[in-house]
Image (cartoon, rainbow over all chains, first blue to last red):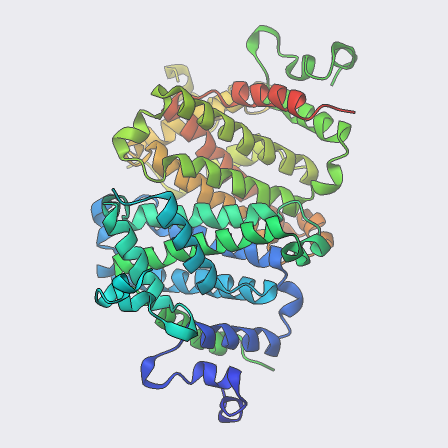
Length: 125
Length: 125
Length: 125
Length: 125
């Protein structure tokens, strides 16, 4: 991200989260810029992005597939595995945000609505 | 979330995003409360949550699997499909956040770091 | 498929396996007939079938995602779950065979070759 | 597997299929021997194998995720991609067979039964 870009408005501010760290909306916009700068948008159809999201979720699961519960709970103690976990989390979130961008879905509103439905569906006794 | 709940402390503030809508951190905390209130934490191991994330990503892909590119691009024009898309996006995000909670991973920092690595890996010509 | 099969009715001879039960090749051909009779071939592109295979594998995993190891080992003792397991195994195998048909891949030869590579890669001590 | 098989050379009798090539049942047994010889059975729980199957199905999908329909249809013309496709098909089939072994599911019978149900569910007009 260049300073020029940062001053360009919404997208710029995106990356420029200051002390508070990056925001979801900032990262969403930054991913859009990243793809646009590389002319990747033609590949970013909803179907391709849904496939990519599923593939990356599989890569995250792969880290755990043969681990015992104990090993899985300690996965972040191993620097290589911890890096891999963060890397796959980033990929899943990246494709989820790009999917939401192309279909104009608000992921936070979708999740808030789902939690409300689940609070009715699974009442606390 | 009721006002009562909002005033209940950290988790409450979570949902209390005011005019700006729900925040990622707010939803993450709310999911934690939701699971705790139902004693679901024993099931929320990293491995189970990674599996659930992958399953939900598959359900999102399922919506698109037989669609043509044109049908896929218009998926939000059909109210039933649009609801299903939002519902599966919510599920993917919910399990991603819960996975991150149990392993203390910051998904926004992970994605920001990944974008930075990708900017080096895929330079714009 | 033999003429016997054609005259036997779609379902019948597919396996044409007699007492030995259905064969993989018989089922592969029967799936091809099934799709042809319903004009589904245009949907059966390699990419769509790979997506469908992944979706069905997710549905199989879904059965197990919250189960303890003990519950998972006993999954076939519950008639409903046992039916679901068999149903998802069938779906995975169906899409795998159809994928192999459209790309002219021999799944048995591919697996035999892979086992041979793995015998070199993971020697027995 | 009998001593005959053991003495036949690892690769050979697996299918015990002679000129006809390997059989599904032969490969299933061979995979069982392969895992036993390496003491991998403790890892081969139904849940782990279902996860591994899903992961491998994702790897197969990954090959196609950014391809156009034309590129996907021609995927076997590229020797590297063709090898990768066969390799992932083998992995999916391997985990499916091992999953079926541990739960005593007959994948061919399951598929034959499913086709019969689908013939009722989707009648040809």
